[in-house]
Length: 162
Ligand code: MG
Image (cartoon, rainbow, N blue to C red; front, side, top):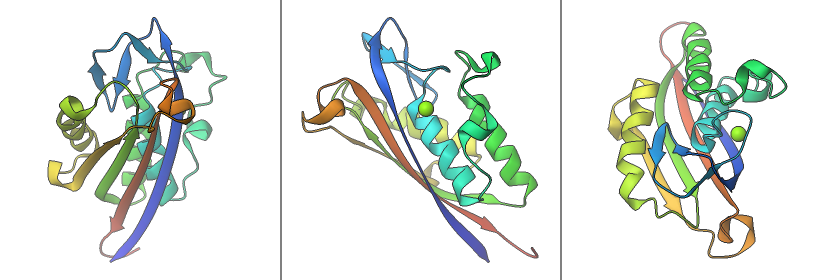
């Protein structure tokens, strides 16, 4: 079996007047993430991990932030495009491990929903997806509540020939 590992990382600023969307799940919070698209930091990190594992470039190659078509785009579109590329190249997802860095809001109550959504988007069982949450220990831009970050690691596999 041919296996590859990929990692992805992303950070977005927290601002007033935007919805907070993490891993395709709307999270109730007075602020949201700023960005050209819906700024879903989790889906961006996962998309980059997938593309990285298959050495197929990065999210900015596929969806430039200079392209007006991507303004406020639902980031599930980016993830679906990456999955399509991987599937076309014969890869399937083994497992995904995600760590979200946020001082606030507390992510304990939404981790299960994010996990279920990610499993659905990747077409894998929920037990192949892990979602962990860390605070910023009140230091740095994340610890001060100015941003949310995410790190994702994915394993992909190709069975049979190729
Ligand atoms: Mg991003």
